[in-house]
Length: 219
Ligand code: GAR
Image (cartoon, rainbow, N blue to C red; front, top):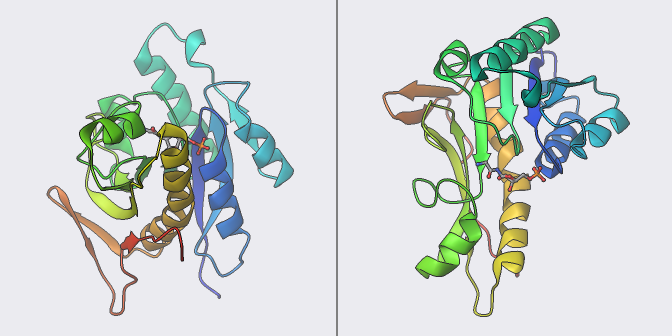
């Protein structure tokens, strides 16, 4: 592929398994994006080691060192601009970003959330799904808006809730779906095929890949 690869920054707070899925996707030279920086708000995030192993520059910006949320957001924004990022992927980044930051990156700020939004925003999504008795659960990649786990949906992947599931088994099934979904959605955005109109995303381009997946764990 001869096209320019879009520079992407990934923001993490912890384990970084979704970061790893994005690293693995970007290892293909034909993938339309490349990760130029990984930023964590927690110096102990295991995902920082994953980035270093892949030879990606990392940076830690500890939110605790900032008295105001806006100051943290400004430091983060400066780091992303210095890195030359054009798309920002939140991958288990557990800080709420303020409206100025979100507006600055509008249409280029993606998040992955472990539920089929708008069901189950917030924390403990797998426990919420089990308590509600839903038969399908899953994950969502969406454009970030100022509300918590809110914004136009780029893609979703659904998995069944199976008899005997507990939070651990359900979380593992959803996580595997997350790792498949996030690179697909980043690809769509990096290729410029995602347009936001109001609260909805439309996909451009003939033969666009489906942005939904139903995953049968037995297949
Ligand atoms: C993932 O399940 C992600 O969807 C979730 O945190 C986990 C991070 O895991 N994000 C949220 O809950 C955001 N609201 P990872 O660090 O292994 O990618």
